[in-house]
Each structure stands twice: as structure tokens, then as C-alpha cells.
Length: 364
Image 1 (spheres, rainbow, N blue to C red):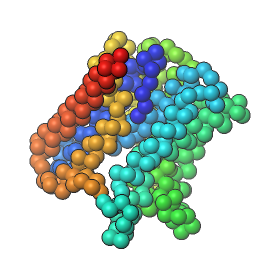
Image 2: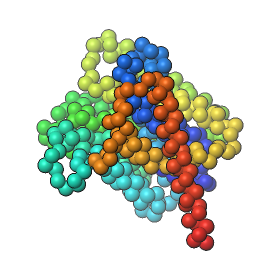
Image 3: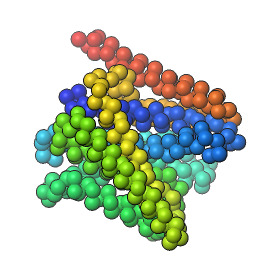
């Protein structure tokens, strides 16, 4: 979700961000349009699509944490002098604002008399933009504390990631709304209707920070096959942890309220992200340059996210496609719609880029 300088460009991260944004756009589009009778994991195509869609958010979050932390460390200056701090703060608060803006409950802006309880709950619930926004602010806080206390950055990120993931099942059992205002409680558990509470989801962003630290401390390591192999080993290890933890939980008959907070789910997702990163980083070893549209897509993930959501779901001021054709398309129609949506988003970022170039030419 962040731009970064050509001097520090890491090709496999560009590819990861492109994969995440394409997955995000097609996932939302198909989810809005696909008919209910086709939404069954008994259909192999849907089962694969459903699994990959569940991995989109972890990929997105992990990559966001990696890029942000890598760029922060690439600026060899103290925290107070690092210009990435101001950029991170601006980005974090912008993401939080846009997260609420997309779900604003009334077109009248200030008249809330007709807003239903369901609309209020949807408005205050924590979604992916608020989650990433707050996670970036948490990353900055971790970086600040680690620098001032002279802590090892990698060890600090590993410790905090572990604490978040381990604590998540227990955090979920607390009825936060009973002693916290609803908008704040929404960030702690799914019981408030939040799809992306901080526990466990911020853990994926901070886990990305571990890789970001490693890349910054070893600037050319991503150009070696050994790097990809190490990522693959860790990915396989986490996948095995997921299998074992699932067996243990079933044998002990442990019930966790939110499936997203289950240890096996977290391990599976971390393992998958690491394995995908290993594959993409290995492929990128043979690639010196990538199509510029991939870089542009990475630079404009926030714009793509906001625009395609407004087209699909509408806003307080505009209707969305879901009102016209929601849950009514066949598989091929949904696939075609996803291709059209991806094409529209690609065209949009290309046109914006060309306009920026023309404006610069006019200024000179």
C-alpha cells in the first residue's frame, strides 16, 4: 500500500503487491455477483477460489508491513529525522478516515435521524482499511520504542507478533463492548461485527515487519536462491504447525469463538504467505525488469481499493452494482465481470499516470 524509491525497489515485493491487488479486485467482484447456488465447496473451482480469497487479506497485510518496515530502515536516520515517519502517520490516518468514509451511514452527512442500528454497527465496525491504518501506527510505535530502548528490531517484531497471535483466542472471549465505547470495542473482537479486528489481523502486518527488517539488514539477500529456500522452509514449517495444532485442538475438543483466531488458521495463512513469497522471490531472480503497470498497480493499491469498492457496493451517495445484479451471475459471467473490473482498474491507473506526466511536461 506504499510507494517506494527506485533505488530501493525489490522486484518480488512489486509482484506480491500485484498479486494481492488482483486477487482483491477479482475476489470482491465475484463475491458480489456469483449466484448463491454456485457457492458450494463441492464445486472444485469454487473451493479453490474460496481458499485463495481467504489468503488475499493476509498477503496484502504481510506485504504492507514488509514494505513499510523495509523503507523505514532504508533511510539511515534516527526516528525523529526519518521522513518515513511523517509519511507513515499521514498514510495511517488517511486509511482510517477512508475506512469510515466508505461506510458512512447517511447521504445527508449531518442528519442521522434515519440511520438504523444495523447501519451504525456497520459504520463503526473495523474493516481492512482501518486495520492496516492502525497497524501502520503500531509499527511506528514499535520502531520508536525499539530504537529508544536499543532493542533488536527483528526480535521485537517476532515477540509482538507472537503475543498478538497467541492472545487472539483469549481476546475474542472478552465482551469488550460491555466496558468500552462501541467504536473502540470494534477494534478488539469480531463480536462487534468487525471483519478485521486488531486481534489477530494486525499480527500479519507486524509479521511482515520481520521480513522488512531482514531485507533492510541484508540489502542484496533477495537476489539469492538461498533467500527463497529459507522462506520456503519457514513456510513448510508453519504449514506443519497448522496441521499439528488442528489435530491437537480437535483431540482436546477446544472451541474458539472466531475461526479467524484459531492457531491452525493463523499458521496456515502465515505458511501460505511465506511459501508464495518464496515462489515469487525465486521467479524474480530471473527477472531484471517487470512491466511498469505492475509497479503502477502497487503504487495505487489504495486508489484501486476505494474505486472498485464504490463501483461494487456503492456509497452513501451512489448505488453499487450489488443492487442491480448482486448474487445473480453464473460462474462464467462472474469471471467475465472480474476481468472487466481488473481491466477498468488497470486503465484507470494508466490514465492517471499519463496525466501526471503531461502535467509535469506542462510545468517545465
